[in-house]
Amino acid sequence: MQIAVNNGRHRTGAGLSHARPDWHRAARKPPRWQEAFTLIELMIAVLLLSMIAMIVLPKVISASQDARESALLSDLQTVRTGVEVYRNEHNARGPHLDERGELDSEHFVERLVGRTFPSGLVAKYGPCGPYLHKWPENPFSDKSARQAIKFGWTAASPRDNTTGWYYNVDTCLVYPNSQHGGLSLSRDNDSSRPGTPAASQDDTCGFRLNGIMEGPDGRVAMINGQRLREGQTIDNAKITEIGDYQVKLELDGREITVGMSKAASPDEFEQPGRQDKTEQPAPGEEPSSPESQTP
Image (cartoon, rainbow, N blue to C red; front, side):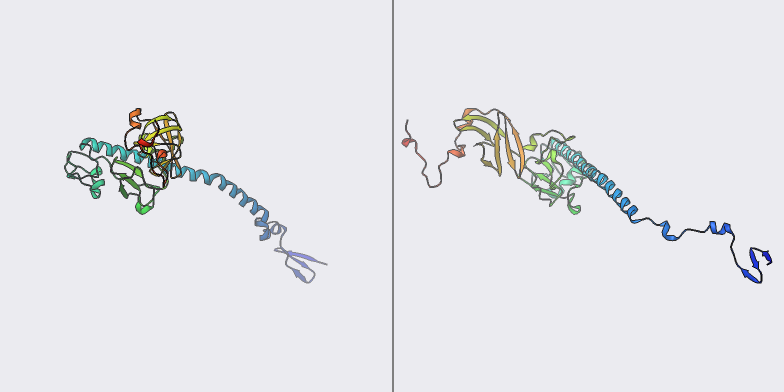
């Protein structure tokens, strides 16, 4: 049998076989299914990604919350400082009053970011101001109401989230009106948080403690001119504890601590019209007259 070789073609007798060289077989690619990941490998990869997300996401959310809180506190301090400087240059008048001393909430922001006369008249070339570069936004409020201001006479912000800010026309204090944020400078005081300033007198929501005295049935506190005991309420705030020099109240689920503002004399506790609410007669019972009392 004769074998002839011609360009890789082997002749065996009269037949012809088309055979490829061995080097071509070695370079052949493996089947496509051998290049994919197995189900176990995919499950391990998903598990690792889930664990990383569980560790990273809470830190990212917490950092974002702290950043918004810090921005709000900084803006709140800036606004309060601007309002106080405005009052010093306008004869103790707040920016909510016009030159006639009437309420003018429409030009409230304009008086702080623009120029005015000492009377409160808004003028382009006035000698006073500006006190703020711009009116800030409350990052905790709805986007459409972040710069809006609500004016009122209540002691502190209602926290109804209808506007970004609340302005007390009696005390000329600005509060955040969002449900969250600005806790250390509003009625939601939490001075235990790191990095927040200590509570000031403005954090007492308008409550003033004038004195504490020991009575026959326990301690009596003089708050805003009223004699009160533990468990009684004043302006929707319930007295939870009467200490030696301070009183704790609960308002809307939040604790408020009111310190002694001045010492009360016994005469103040006996002033007419300031009787202890616990000494009032029960419904249907006639009050006892001085003549009926035994000496």
